[in-house]
View 1 (spheres, rainbow, N blue to C red):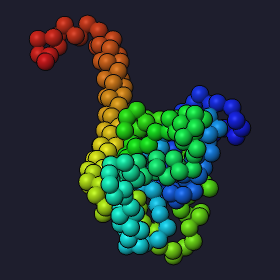
View 2: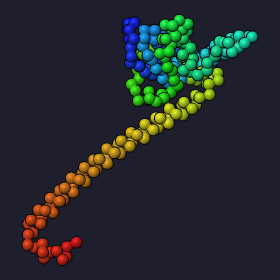
View 3: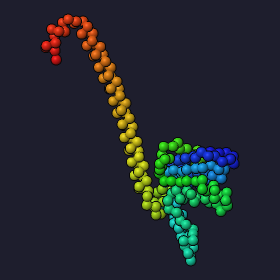
View 4: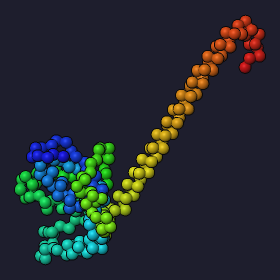
Length: 219
């Protein structure tokens, strides 16, 4: 990622699995303002400090905040993990200015790992990792689980698709091992056939004129 105020043309793909929401959002917000283009994948695996019941109560209190006369005017309560991360980052960016709007436009967030990002190198942010920032024994919950509790209906679909992806990768690994074994057997068979051909030629050279006698009974 960039460390100054220059613009970086390269897109950085961040794997958000087991990152703390607030720390991840603050780091990404700063990089976006510096000109970095960022794609965040696996947003459903983001962690929040505090147990699931506590976080659910907090979110339900947030859901009650609405405009009495016209609720569609806001606030908008996102349920999808990617949109929750997007809204968290938006709160750390002056998004009503041109600079902030341009920074927010450089962000993309997804649940799961959609193509073509499944074939690109993914990075982590050590300063936001749960294992380095959350003390041992403290409770935490996953953003995807919280979203499913408050109205997001795609949690099981994402989990199933990820499980299917792992199964597919396992099948590819098995197929690669099978091809390697088949290649070894093919090379060995080719070598044996080559040696057999040499042996037959040597035997024919030794027999010489006796081949005509053996030809009628040869099979």
